[in-house]
Each structure stands twice: as structure tokens, then as C-alpha cells.
Image (cartoon, rainbow, N blue to C red; front, side):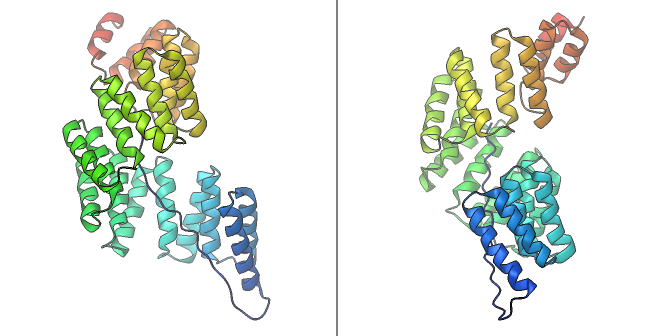
Amino acid sequence: MQKTKYFYLILILFCTTLSCDNDKAKAGRFLLMGNNELANLNYKEAIRLYTEAIGKDPEFKEAYNNRGVALYKSGHYAEALNDYTFAIVQIDPTYTDAYKNRFEVNLVSGSYQRALEDAEYLATVYPDSAYTYLYQGLALTDLKRYDEAISKFDMAYQKDTENVEAVVNQANAYYMSNRYEKARELLQKAISIDATEANIYNTLALIATQEGDFQEALKQVNQAIEIDSRNGYFSNNRGFIYLNLGELEKAEADINMGIKLDPSNPWAYRNKAIFYYDNKSFDAALRNIELAAQYDDSIPLLNHYWGLVLVELDRMDEACAKFSLSESSEKEMLIKKYCK
């Protein structure tokens, strides 16, 4: 499953124009050098330069914010959160750029309620901005408050009728709440706004997969990948489609690519577990299921396959516990069969 999210990291260009070579002027120069390294994806050097800037000016909120961006980009979410929070709490409680960036990290790291709180603050500052409603909708979607999310995405669209992100994310909320026809309707609307938005076709593929039309799903996900070949969720979703088509070699290649492009994607580890289960490599399947659960233990079919793998490993009590948590249509049959 692709969580469709659109964020814009704010890279603030700050230049001190003081005539004397004091600490604030030095801090400004370190910030500019750090921004240059960040733009060139040299995150370690950017972090070093922002740290130098902070050393010269401990209340330099832009340096904390931009160091947070570099830390986030290099996968250090907790440290990024610390920098954004310090900039807000210790320096400027109204610093909206840090709120925007903290929202993103909270969302990506699974702190959905905190992400919603940041989005709600931004909405009080920018009540007429489409992106604040988009942010709220994203957090509400992850909190599984789908109707509220749909309302927020609609408000974002009303503020900006060219906002394809709002329409696609609203469609995703309908898809995730099993209202496929409404999702399709919105995705056709999104195509009329911007037919080059890859997430449109990925969501169409997800709907077709849920309905068991794997050839249509393959057609749609291929279109998404043609537009954005570096999206790990798209590769993983195609891998799941190949699993259902029985094309295991292609499935493995796509799922591995999905993990390479996004090593924290729980859906990819779940799909890798299904691949190993189908190949009767049950220990490997269990390792991947447990890894998926570390990132998100609520994704569909996780407990279903977890139980099936545990059955094969003759761990029946644990298997029955997983079946009891499953949302699969086979839940009652499996409990009756294995959990007497």
C-alpha cells in the first residue's frame, strides 16, 4: 500500500549582512554552506556545518530547522524531531517551518496523533491555505478516521481546485475504507487535473487487486512505475500482484526492489514473507513477518499469514492467537481447523 504523501521541505536561505565578522555573521555563513551541501545531498557535511552555525549562535532557529532536514533525509528521525522541537519550544513557538517539518517526521515515523496536532496548529496560522487541510487529512487517514480525512481533503480541494494531491488522497481514504466506486470516481477527476500523477494509477492498481482483477492491477501499476520508477511502494505493489499471478521470480525481484528503495516499508516485508511462505521457507517467512510488524502490525493479511507460518512451524497456540486477530475472510475456517 502506498501512503500518498506530499511534503515540501523548506530550505531557508539566510544571510547575515553585519559589517563586522561577529559570531552571528559566521553562523550565517555556516548556514549558507550547509544549505549548499544539503542541496547536493551531502547530508553528513551539511549536518556538520549546521552544527557549526549553532555553535556560533545557539538561538539560530533556521540552523536547527535545516539540520533537522538533513538528519531526516539521512534517516535520523529522532534527532530531526529533537531539532524541530528545540527550535519551536526553546526559540520560537510560532516557527511554522519547523512545525511543517516536524509534521512530516511524525507522520513518517508513525506518531500520527502528534502529526495531527502540528497540522491543526498550522491550520490556525494559515486558515486559508490548502496544504493545512491536506496535512490534517493525511494524519487523520493514518489514524483511520477516514470520514474526517475525506472532509479535510475536500476542504483542501475547495481552497485549490488544481490540487491533485488533495483529490488523490481523498480517493485513498475512500479506498482504505472499502468504498471503491467513489475512489475510482475521484481518481478519474484527478486524471483530468494532472494525468502525470503516478499515485493515481497506483491506487487504481490497489483497487483492482482488492477486486481480484490482477491483469488490470498490473496494467495500472505499470503505468505508475513508468512515471516514477524510483518509488518503492509501487515496486512492492507490483510484486504483490505477481505473487497473486503465480509469477514468483518477478514477484521476488519487485519486492526486493521495494525494500531497497524504502527499507522501512512494512508492506514489502509482509509480501516477502508471503513469497517465502509460498516457497515453504517458513523460518524466513516468520523473520519477515516480524520485521513488518515492527514497522506496522495493523496492515492487512499480516496476522493471517503470521498464523499460517506458525502452523507450519508447529507453534499452534501462537498461530491461534494470530488467527483471532486476523481480518481475513478465512479467519473462522482457520480457527475451526487449527484451534480446537
